[in-house]
Length: 215
Image (cartoon, rainbow, N blue to C red; front, side, top):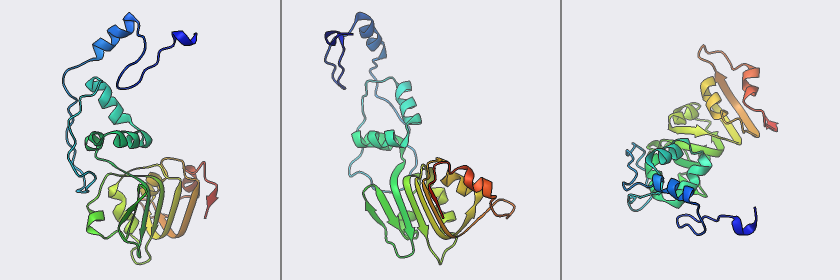
């Protein structure tokens, strides 16, 4: 293909040349009604200072539904950055790193968060997607990790550090389900199955194919 035969498209405005077949296909995709989404329940966390405006997007309802349903965390992050409408459609909080510790306070920084796990604002949160790092260490509450699990929507961790905690095999499987963990640091940790038996070593290693450091 020569340079003069190439087609260049810039969203939302098109600049270039379209064949009659392509024009016909684009006409079929047009629709006059805005995409309608059902508002989902979420934690009372202030993300934006103003409500989202209804967006009229150049996609059919089915295509936009597919994008929102199947978007990865990285795609969701880009959608959120492009328009707050997408956040209100999904209602899922993206958190790069989450630090939970006895001496920490609730703070937000660089798409990350720290907490002692007991602040009311943190307790009201849900649908958290932790993308990179999770650190939980609280010597006075060995069940803290177990208590925050209902808040987690998904996990694609690369670094996991847990200290002085007791939790289940199912919860461990959830934390490592992304199979991306490169560094895992456990200290004074107990993991039990539904029968109260300690986790089997082979099971422990199964979801750590990329791990370079395990302690």
